[in-house]
Amino acid sequence: MTLVPGGELSVAQAKQCYPEIFAINWRRRLMHGLAWGISLAMLIYGLVLFDFSPLRIWDGLGQLGMLVRFMVPPATEPTVVWEFMKAIFETLAMAFIGTLFAALLALPFAFLSARNVFRFRLGRFGIRRSMDFLRGVDQLVWALVFVRAVGLGPLAGVMAIIISDIGTLAKLFSEAVEGCDRKPSEGVAASGGTTLQCTRFGLLPQALPMFISSTLYIFESNVRSATILGIVGAGGIGYQLSERIRGHHWEEVATILILILVTVYLIDWVSGKIRGRLIEGE
Amino acid sequence: MSSPFDDHAGSGAWQAYCAEQRKAQTEKNRAWILGGVAFLVLFLTSAYLSHFSPGRIIEGLPKVHEYIAKILPELGVTTIREDMAYWFYAFPDWMVLLGETILMAYVATLLGTLGAIVLGFVAARNVGPNRWLTILSRRFLEIARTVPDLVYALIFVFAFGLGPLAGILAIAIHSMGASGKLFSEAIENIDLKPLDGLKAAGANWVQGMRFAVFPLVASSLVSYSLWRFEINVRTATVMGIVGAGGIGQELITAIRMLYYEDVSALILLIVITVSLTDMLCERIRHGFIGKENLS
Image (cartoon, rainbow over all chains, first blue to last red; front, top):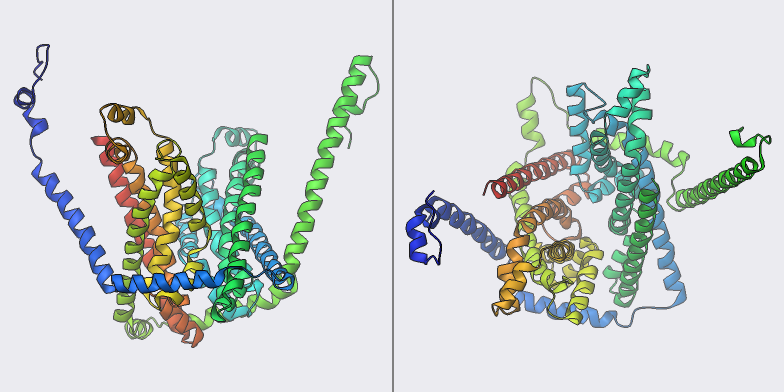
C-alpha cells in the first residue's frame, strides 16, 4: 500500500493512489440490479394478479369508512357486554389451559431433541422433524381438524393450542437446554448420577427460568391467537366476532374489538411483570 | 419438617437469628401456598370454562384418532405410484394455489415493511420529527399489531370483496404494526453521532434519516423482514378460511365437504411449503450476515 504524504488529498489523487477502491465492481452491480429487478417484477406481477387497481382500493376504503361510521358508537348495553366478557374469559381460559399442557407435554420432547441430553442422532432427528410438523401447520388448521373430530366448542381450541405449541415450546425449550453449562451435570455424573438424575439436577435448574419465560411469551401469543380460533367454531370471542360481522352488527363488532385490545394489553402487562419478577428472583 | 433453626439452645444473639430465619421461612412458605392456591383456582376455573375435563378428553381422543385415520390415504407398496397419483390428483391446481399463497405473503410483507420503515422513523423516540407525531404513530402501530390479522381479514373481506386483496391488506397492516415496533426499537438503539454530523452539515430530516440512520439499521431491517415473511407465509395459508385468498380456501372446502384424503394431502403440502420457506429464509439471512462480516 502506498502512503500518501501529509496534507489535503484531492479526489483525483485518491483515485490514482487507490484505483481498486474506486473501480466499479460490475459483477456486484449486475447481481444487485438483478436482485432488485426480480423482487420488483414479482411485486408488480403480484399487484396485477391480485387486482390491486387504484379504483378497487379507493372503493374499498370508502366501504371501510362506512363500516367505521357504523361502528361508532360501540354497543354498551350491559347484557351484550356481559356476554362478550364471558367469551373473553373463555378465550383466556383456553389460552391458559392450552399453554400449561403444551408446556408440560413439550418437556420430554425438548430434552429428547437437545444435543447434550439425547445422544442418539437418528432419534433426535425424528423428534425434531415431528416437532417441525406440529409447528408448520397453523393453529387455525389444527382447530379446523379438531372441530371436525371432537365437535364445536372450546375443547377443540384447547387441543389445537396444545398440539401446535408442543412444537413451538419443544424447540424453544431444547434451545434453552442446549445453551446450558455442562459442568453441573458433569458433577452429578461424577458423583454417580444416572442420565436422568444428571438432567434433573444438572440441567433443569439452569434451564427453568428460560422455560418459564418462553412459556409466558407463548401464553401472550396464545391469548391473541385464541381470539381468532372461534372463527372456525373452536370457542372463545372469535365466534361472537365472526357472527356479529356476518350479521352486520357493526357497533357490537366495535365493542368486541375494544375488549380484545384491552385484554391483550392487560395480559401483556401482567405477563411482563411476572417475567420480570421471576427472572430477577432467580 | 425439622430445620437447624428449630433448636432452642444457644446464646441470645443466636436465638434472635433463629427466630428471624424461622419467620422468613414461614413467610416464604406462605407465599408458596398462596401462589399454589391461586394457581389451582385459576386452573380449575379455566378447565371448567374451556370444557377441559378428563371425561371429555377420554371421549374425544378416540374421535381424533378416528378422524386422522380417515384422512390418511391408503398407500400400497406395489401400487405406490397409482396411489400417490390418486392422493394428489389435483396436484397442478394446488401448486398454483400454493404459489399464489406465497406471492400473497411476499406482496404483503413488502407493503407492510414499506409502511413499517416510514412509521418506524417517525415512531423512534430519539430521531422522531415531532413528539406528537411520534406518540400518534406509536399508538397506531400498537393497534395495527394487537388486532389479529384474521380479524382484519374478516372485516376487509366485507370492504374489498372476497379474494386475495383483502388477505394481503390484512397481513400487510398486521406486519406493519409488528415490524414497525421492532424497527423503531432498532433505531432507538443506534449511535446518533453520524446524524449529528449530517445535521451540522445542514441536512434536513429526510436526508438525515436516509444517510445517517437508515444505513445503520438496514441489516436488521432485512433480517426482520425475512423473519416476517416466514410468519406471513404461514398466515397466508389460513387466510382462505375467511375467504381472503390462497390455499386455505381449498383446505376448508375439503374439510367441510368431507373430502378426507384431500385434507391430508393439503396439510402435507402446506407443511412442506412452510418448511422450505423457513429454510430458504434462513440461508438468505446467513448469507447476508456473512457478507456483512466480510466487508
